[in-house]
Length: 460
Image 1 (tube, one colour):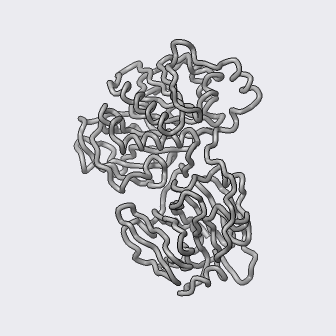
Image 2 (image 1 turned 90 degrees about the vertical axis):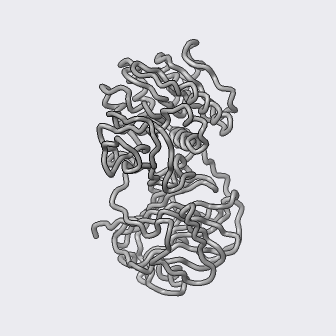
Image 3 (image 1 turned 135 degrees about the horizontal axis):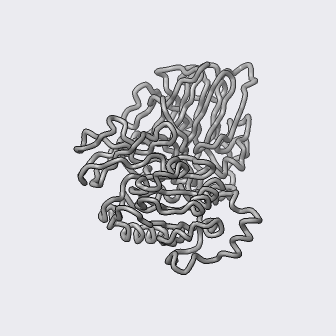
């Protein structure tokens, strides 16, 4: 976008609870159930905020790391502002009691652990917007309950001996994996699953079966994923068998990110994703060209491009796009939300960045301007749905994901999996039917990072 005077930032909320549980009927239930059953849980002394229930009942194999896992989640809650209750008492699964929690963590549960009435209560909780985080043997649980099988994503089949392996990180924007490099070396018990969840869940990380012995799923071996499921949010990680895992900072951050996604404290695009080809993979800017002053700094360690100076634009000159879905991850580097950048689409090839302003369209990144010039807007033409935008937006310092879908003269924008803008070009000077894409470096002091820029062709 062109330079503009700075404006004070609106007071956005970045922590959102699931909405449908806050009905008058449930409010009455909340008044009737202010505590768990006496035998069911040990309360946390964490500060008020989100509340998480850790459930670790086992009816088959019992992992000796469960106490370490509970302790780690309590510590994470105390450090990051969410309260933690822990229980192995299935009577905690009532509608009134579950309504107290933003997410339920199934920590290495095994076997048949809930009766039909408790299962129904948990299904209603998820359908009303509740959160689920499954850890390791949560996939070795409730094989005869189809709803749970869909929620966890895949059931456990077998595993080889504990050993070191390479985890390949596919999504480096999700809060559970944003802190990781492209490859993560660690020792754990590596599960094979009865099915591959890729077509119904968003894969965060996979196992490289060439890096260890005994894997049986082949080249595509998901080990961590997330999904929107029947109205709720679900995260699962196959990691966490060993006691040592819960003392490992990288794994603890992985677990924390998954829990914060499940509670709704942080947002992510957890729709299934197939068929995208990289335009920027974090290692090279081959095919890209800078137009105008300033530029982008490439950090191969983090796989990011960070804007510097300007006003200019880095555009992908290797290929003109027609009818496509463009996805990319972006993050404001500052803590005020006053950084400025954008994504240009539908402009002609040019070494002048203003050609993109005058002949294309910009999907804005800037939380501090007028509605038609702020994050999610088609700059200067159409505001995003601000209520949906605010609910989907992560705060400065956290990663966000845009999907920009162009078909004919229609331009749609998704933020972290939520559609926030739907615009149709009616300007005879511009056309979205073909053109190039680029990312903006707005000016000194504006630091916005990008990574994992990818595209998929769509039917015309």
